[in-house]
Amino acid sequence: MGIFEGYRNGDSVRLEVVYQIARNRPNTIVENIVTNSFYVSKIINPSNPNLNECQQFINRFNYYGYGSFVYLSGSNFNGCEDKFINLTYVYINQPNDAAPGRDVFPYEYRPQNLLNDVLINVPNGFNFLRSEVSLNIGSGQENSNSFNSIITPTSITGRNLQYNVGQLFKTQNAAGIWDNPDEAYAVNIKVYLAPDCNATTGKVSYAYNAIHQGQLASLPINGGNVSADDDLSKSGESNADVLFFKAPKLSLQSSKQTNNGASNILTWPLKINNVAAETEAKNVWIAFRNNSGRINLNNLTLGATTISPSVGNIYQLGNLLPGGSEFDLLVSANYSLNCNLDSIVAEIGWDCNGYPNSISTISCPTVTYPLFVKPFNTTLSASSIFPVESRPIVIKELCEDIEFVIQVDNEGQVDASNLLFDVFMPNGFELIPGSTYIQYPINTSVPPAPNVNLLNWRHINNAQDLGSDPPRP
Image (cartoon, rainbow, N blue to C red; front, side):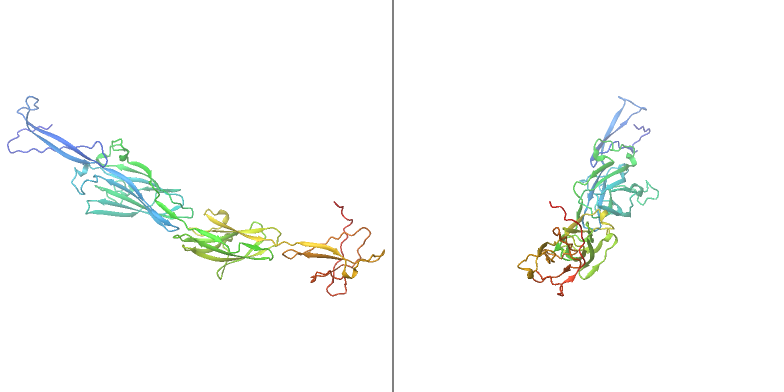
């Protein structure tokens, strides 16, 4: 109620009314109707019936409720390449159906939300590199301004990246670089990531809070509404996968997976392929596990180049392009002859962050491939026969010398060495000292004559008398 005295013809009265916003309705046009009536009277503080209404005025104005939302955009990571994700906070202070730049009810009554703290959680396998932030202020379709800056997380805990965006605004920090926008704006945080060998396609989660300021600084966090759409503190997750990771795919094979054990020198040809269509394999390596200890790696060649092992006996091979590119290797090893099946295991892998130092601590996926040694055993047969000149067999007299031949045949696939003969003679027989000779090799299937005067017989040490014949089973 206002009182004016001495109001004469030709005078004018201007009434200014300040309205305080008590509630926000997000992203909505609110029409306010204000009725003003003008009265005249001859007395001070009149009351009915002494009030005479001269004219009534009805005013309308619109309040544009503010709103905000967050959206995420991701990237496709092909192997070890570095890319980024975008988290964008959008503040709206006029509805989408309002014409850009429309003159809305007093700008000073359109409170701003200042984005403050932001938390971004990235999936396992993606490592933080750096980040940038930009403030984009819109002034209608024809005019907008963008302000860019480097931003560093205030803390990095595991996969959580914590940002304080509020400190970039001058009203929150005297050293801030941004003036408070008085209209719609967007803050974009660009986070650069580097995948590692354990990266997988996944979603990004986030949380943020904002600050009420201006005329609505006293409003509760939800703007006086029960709707969560106006909440200044929110968290969520990308509705779908935004980080797409395509890993290289290695294969390992050999055209000769099994060596025979006839020789103590072994070789295995190996072929490593990257069968991924688009993704390069970085820092490809190979190592060998020798569980038995009887196979000792001699050298490894890549084409015509000999590759020496690095720390942890890991062979560093380099990068392998996609689309079936390959490394052709040849493994050479020394083998301690053994009668059992033996093997070593070839193991290959890759990593974005360099080569491993030990295969026992590798956390990246690997491919293994066994390389076998098949033993070629000896098969010995022995027979005791009389020489050909003693046939037909004649009966020996008492105290006569008896000559006979023990013939041993190796019917196996590899040489036999360190042969030990155990000869069990009947009771009453004694070995004549100095009468033991050996002939090797025998080139005929006919038993040799025990003629020690022939050059192909060699004298050997006397046999050792081990005592009585062991009991028969």
